[in-house]
Length: 175
Image (tube, rainbow, N blue to C red):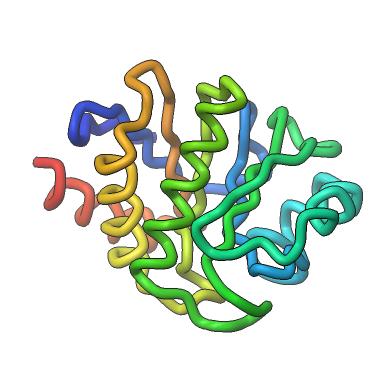
């Protein structure tokens, strides 16, 4: 794990499985229908249980730029924050969609008093953004939303290759 101070916020970069995160919330880069089929959403549903999706689906359709929190089932986190980065399952994300989703996630975290938040590379993978573009959009959103100074933000890269790419982008953006 690498710690980096970025715009006054400490960001922790982690390589590994986000479903193992022990903290207040894991962010799900959702689709607007809140169907948890593939990618991070599918992994959260497989490990945490279908009740996460069942609870989330009560709020669909959820537009990009909004987020909701649900219980986390059997995950070690307390909650899952669902923040759409794409319209439909399997569709492409964008830089702006990721920024909107991260801002919405941070607002929900603040509203619920959540301090330790884990983000995957939002909009990457199934969403089609590169790890670097995902990280840049996320860092911009975190800086613009002014995450609480007492918040611990974790960004999970699925593998070592993505970790190196994201680490380089964070160093470029944050010094």
